[in-house]
Amino acid sequence: MEHVIDTLKARGLFDNWTDPGVYDLLKTPQTVYCGFDPSADSLQAGNFVAIMNLCHYQRAGHKVLALVGGATGMIGDPSGKTSERQLQTRETIARNAECIKEQLGRFIDFGSGPNPATLVNNLDWHGKFTFIDYLRDVGRYFRMGTMLNKESVRARLESPNGMSFTEFCYQTMQGYDFLHLYDSFGCRVEVGGSDQWGNITAGTDLVHYQRGVQCYGVTVPLVKDSSGKKFGKSEGNAMYLDSKKTSCYQFYQFFLRSEDSVVIRYLKAFTFLPLDEIAQLEEAVKTAPEKREAQRVLAEDVVRRVHGEEGLAQALRATQALFGGSLAGLSAADLLPIFKDAPSAELPAADAVGQPVVKVAALAGLFKSVGEARRMADGGGLYLNNERVGASDVVSADRVIDGRVFVLRAGKKNQRVVKLAR
Image (cartoon, rainbow, N blue to C red; front, top):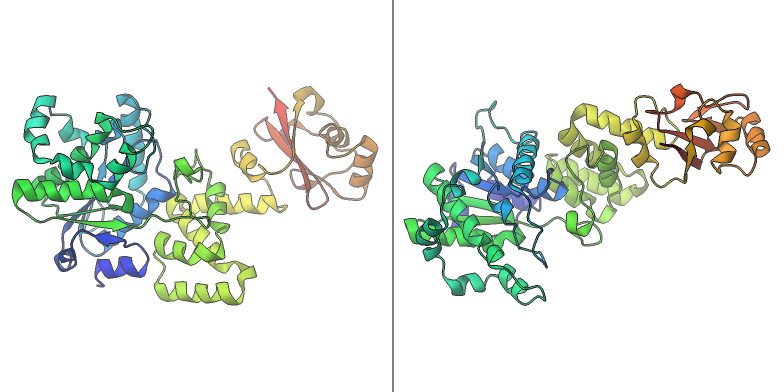
């Protein structure tokens, strides 16, 4: 099997390592870990890069540890942040951690395969420390000069908001995670985003000081969109893996709309498609960009693995609905994101349900008058929920999706989303 580092490099998933000796170490099965921050109740596409990274290690025969930061999540990682996070309650962090555990299980094999991964929560060991014990047993091994020279710390210290003592201690907690996982599992490799360099090296240094063993960090480049922004909540382009926060349709459309300049990079990073197939798609981007074949393959592959075949089918139904396909089987929650860019109107239920569709179309502003709406209907160009209606048809209750919303359309492109006032 190809060396995992070679695989990562070929797919654009390698950024740096703390020491090149990790390459030789990884020629034989090793224990590798990556941490996930439960600051929200869902991971998002930016985290998907780290998940794919762990999947490649597991596929290469390495033992994978996925760490959920039940303790570190209470502090908040200051890396890449310009101000301190709003601290969340223990209950919120615990609930978020459970949600993340479920999502990780969709991609990483925790039990059924020949090389199962292990899920750990750092609250299980950090929660046992008293403050004095932590200072004596962990804090004494961290040097102030080294900590102050971390890029993530320097940037915050120089910012107008500064840095609290709480945030300053974050790197000691992540560093101790590495030591604990080395002692408990023999873990010698941590993987993480390039913005985690300071936290990772805090761990490699601590294991070296306390156990005299060389451990390693391997970082992943931050995957960015075509405008150069990384995926994430702070950039306003987070695509959540939870379909309640980002619908299957929205997730599908996000990748389907990928620019030609980034789609091949996304195919390498977010899918397991063989590189020769990706090369063929890259050629198609050059010779027939209008077909957007690479974008379609990317969107279908990612949605299928994140949301399953049912989620992909739902996304495809929603996409077809946007272009005149059936709305059958779609809920109001599905429908609103599909037509979010279409004009909308809100009407009292009494002015819509049971009323002639031509009257409702005029009230909703799709036409200037009932007469204009009637002429459009007589010409076969008026649609209710993408089904052609006549001038005598009414908006019956069964045509109002979830009792909340329906869609009127005049011709091919002129749409109006009608929401019923509650």
